[in-house]
Amino acid sequence: MGIYSHLSTDELTAKRDRLLAALESRLTGPSSVSSTGRAVGYQHANQAAEIRRELDAINAELLRRDGAPARGPIYLV
Image (tube, rainbow, N blue to C red; front, side):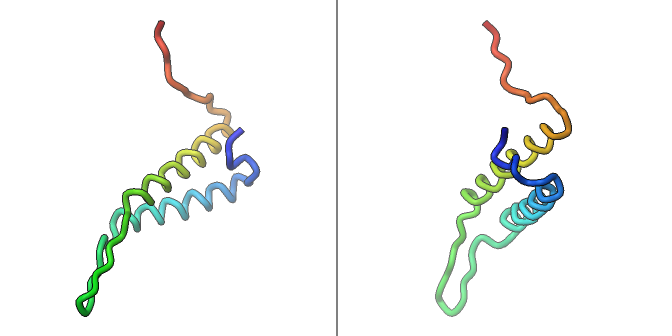
């Protein structure tokens, strides 16, 4: 059971679309802005990693609902 199991499928797809748009804006937007001698920098790497983790969790939940088997690492002994 995932952390998004309480949401409906429509809500999950809407959330995934919003997160994809946010990720794209983080990765393609400016990383710093300066005006009148002041500069502001943004930390995109941490935010992008968090968004990617959320997207992975949403995609795993959607795959589980579609009946796809959960895939994990394969260990050879």
